[in-house]
Length: 281
Image 1 (cartoon, rainbow, N blue to C red):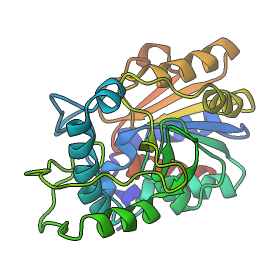
Image 2: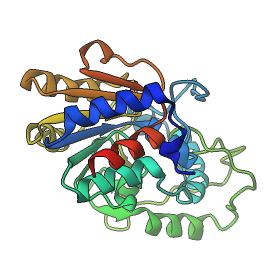
Image 3: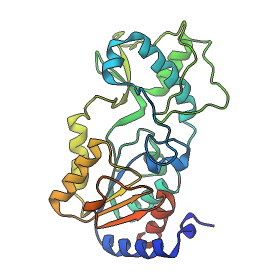
Image 4: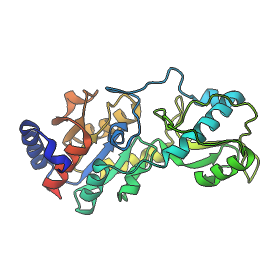
C-alpha cells in the first residue's frame, strides 16, 4: 500500500483542491522537523515531542568549557546514530516535484541533510547542517566525518552505546564527560562548532537572503512539517505574504500562520506530500 492510499476521502478532496491551486505555479517549500519524524528523528514540538529543559545556547557554548565537553561527547554519540536515518516519502515527494518542475526550491529548518539525500538539489539549510563543522577562530570548514575521526583518535574509549535514544537536535545525554578531549581546529588550534544555528544565535544574513530568493522566485509557498514557532520560519512566511502569493500549510497540529493560509491540510507530511506529488508530478 502506498502512503497516499492511507488518506481519508475528505483529506483527499482537500488535496485535490490544493493541487489545483498550485498547478502551473513555481512552488517554494518551507519544511521543519515534522517532515523528518517519519525518518526516526524526533521533533522539539507537537504530539509526542521530547522537549529539552536546557537546550544548548551559543552563549553557554562559548563561555563554559564543561558544557562544550558535554555537547561534543553527546553530539558525537548522537552523530553515530544521526547518520543512519534515511529520507522518507515526504522528502522523496518533494524531490520528485522538483524534477517535474513544480517545486522551485526548498528552505528547510532541519539540519539532517535528508532533503539533499532524497534528491532535492535547490535546498537552503537555513539553520545549517550537522554534516559540517566550523572553526570559530579562523573560519575553516570541515566535513563532520573528519572531526569524528579526530575525536575518536583523541578519545579511543568512546564507544557508541546500544539502543541509543536521540534528543531532538541529534545528540544524546552522556553519562559522564570525565577525561573527554574536544578536538581543536587542525588549522589554527581554535574552537570548533558544528555548522548549525544554536539557540540565541542569528541565522547568517547571506543564508537568509538565499532563503528569501527561493520565495521571491516562486509563485506559491508550501509549508510542510513545522509549527512555525521559530522566527526564521515566520520571516519566510512574511516574505510570501508581502508578495501576495498562495500559501498552503501541511502539518499535524495548528501553526502560527494557519489564519493567513489559502489552504491548510491537517496530516502527516509523508502521505500528504506523496499524494500532492501524485497529482502534480
